[in-house]
Image (cartoon, chains in turn red, blue):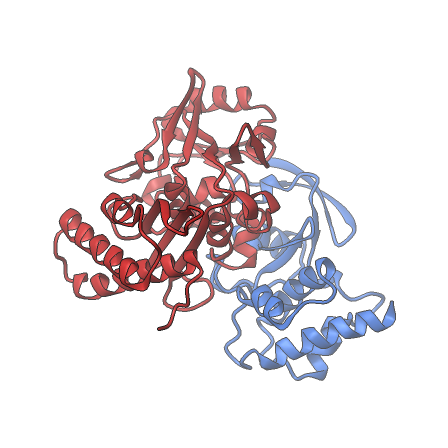
Length: 290
Length: 157
């Protein structure tokens, strides 16, 4: 590894110029919960890094605010901040719920939503609700900014940003009034990485029928995505166990269509069906058990 | 090397650290504060937990270079004038340790919890120490001790 330099820019401009100069040799440093481990293990992803760019002092990357019906969530928002955010509990409760399931208190105090997404793991818990919210990542570089829907951040090898690019915030519409849920299946309750998760959101009309639906399973496709067919099935119908079971089936069929039948399919198929059904039941406020 | 200027257990510390140095090494190797233990080194076991700016964090995955202006509390900063803190005393009284390796980290997680939330529910206590692994005791005595410490603090106020 090269001799490592450390920079802690105080303005976004300064940061983007530093990153432009160092190009692929720059590594943005958010909470460090992944980067610190990679550095110590001399992992291949940090082998060519010679500059750590600490994002801690960049004001525009912090905080959560509501502006013209859109939530702006700074990339440096920690999981603990997101889990406790009054604004998120009102406008995107399943994102707060997902943030609350990440790691441990120590990890949630340090790790950030931007880092959770940009680390590029298909098991990132916050990526599922962000996908269901149709959140866009604001990607900044010295030459300007572009907005990228969260699923489109992902290439063949996880999140693929160009050298010098940085996710500064996520922007998504308020889901106040929607019924949302996040369900995570881990190997144990605490500190578990998702084996699978599902973020679901339902908008109900006055007559109780579903007018809009979002279903975004995690660890199921190559990158986070919604299951459009299952969503469309729900439109105009009243919430019921049978309907949600059918949405689960459509979701697992979509999984097999996209990823093929693998050694894990015998496990994943029934589990995904059950998780989608439960996530929808929970969102609709129906009992999970018959 | 890079200079960091921060506070450890109420004392101002200014020193040069390597760009990739971890807080746990700075505490143990440079400052001789060996009460903070290193277990897994990947942020999963919580033995190295310290409090930075009021929040419990794993010092094994905290970059020392980023600590300018920070307020760090380690297990050495918990007792006052040679007297054990309520949490430490409650852990002794409830036999909430055997080998003791995880105990400094558990005390720091408990302190961060009680400083922010003086009257936690059992579930909140469980959540607060879910990132502190103990392979000796099971966790019931630890949970009892933290609940008791909260009551002792309340009585003193």
